[in-house]
Amino acid sequence: MTNYKIHRFPDSRIASIDVCEIGKQKHHVTGLVEFDVTLSRKKIREYNKAHSEKISFNAWLIKVIACIVKKYETSGSYLTGKNKLIIFDDINVSVVVEKDVKGTKVPVPMIIEKANEASIESITMQIAEAKNREFTENDIVLLKKTQRSERVYYLLPGFVRRYF
Image (cartoon, rainbow, N blue to C red):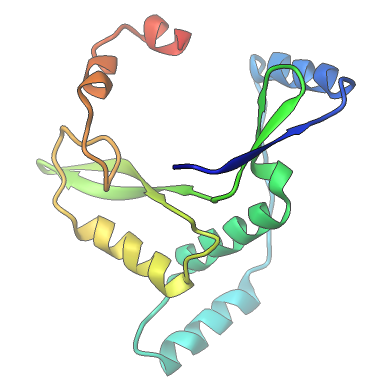
């Protein structure tokens, strides 16, 4: 069972949310940032030289993001109703892994559950296992079998899919 908290926030934020919703309908750049990760990459290389279990830069980045989202809970929350935030206790991170399906490279999402609690080594291993796991065209998300309702979803016209 998923645990979560519900926080109320001021009505004055509703206008801000409305502006964001209108803005999503316009051409925009969601975010463009640049970070210097030179020191972090150096530390990862040093770690990998000293340990038999290697870690990846992607796993490190996922761990950092998950820990920051956990520390600043409202950054990973979502709005329900006019002024309630849903804040989940667990930080699950979706990552895209490239898979080969009948000779075609396909980007497939996988979910790293409780990423804020997982070690960087564990996240690296989960990604590596997902890359090597057998995958069929009936799968939608790695580590999860496709439900019939999900398969029907793909048969619906675009305007119907986007309605929900």
